Length: 412
Figure 1 (spheres, rainbow, N blue to C red):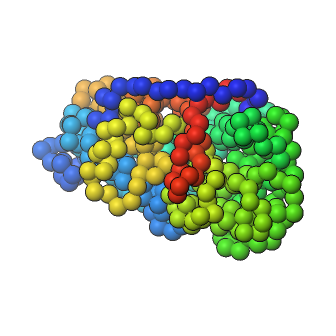
Figure 2: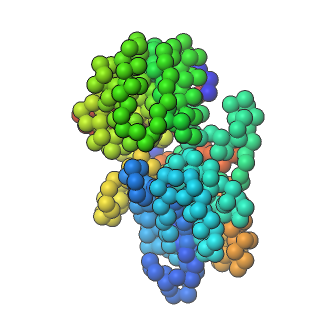
Figure 3: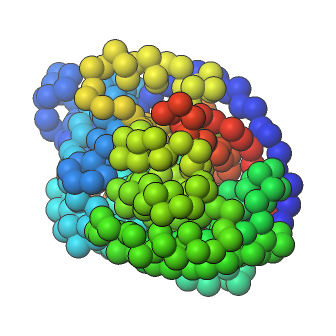
């Protein structure tokens, strides 16, 4: 992205879309089905166990809430939705296997997920080969929608079946760079990433913008995200004049890394992307997480009128764990699939096409025109399948909580 100013954006959208959502499996009488209704399955893929399970469970729970709400309100006449959730344990190979399984289920008409960009890349072609629509609430790597040469301006959409409700690292990294340079007045950064698709890409977009602004990258390093001892890298950071650390990666490694950097004598903040925006980051880093920053997609849900019903219904739903960073986006991703199903049903005289391939193809085509006021604001997709909602926020750990300090839109 280019060097531009940030504009604070306030969002006030209607709450009507919060009565929407979906997921399902055909010819099943569970979850309010029966009565001759068609049951449509919406698949879901996320890390439901392992280090990133807090984020994954938040995605699953929020999609579940969407499905239950849609069924309760009879959102699509003659259709009951059902959610089928699969665990990818944050591994690309497992995600690909899950994609194959979902494609093989003739009742699946759309898929929500995954969390990780590298997992998403492993799934895209599997879904595209069978015209099965996929909407991710969390993938942020720009390449997934705009191709490998997106940074040169040669944007090419590789998969018409792939959409996302989360904005990309092409915006998120530069947004954080502008905040740290222009508002925090910090000019020297040490950049570290975990060598994974998400982390390396995020660190690269941050570094590019930070240097354009006049900032200096005083050191770079890579870590193995499965390690727990980062003392070597921490010592290197402490020996530089870095004002802060930017980490491209996820909270299981990011929290101990940031903590060990402070313990090594560098009492400086660590800044990262949306994969650090979790209560788990603070639990792992404890007092050493104080003063650290994380960017995240969208505005804080607590500030949006559109999210009030979602937050209340989630609390009343008795779910284990918080909806986390991507809960609202998961709800909206699920709801987008419901709206696409609804459009196809209405187009075909109140029924889905009997041919599975035709039904999936029509739902994918309908997704391109889906637009509604959702939990996270306006939900819709551009010509690449990217969200039209470009809002971002930055949070600082204060008093053991992520406190919003900036919300706006990056103009690049």
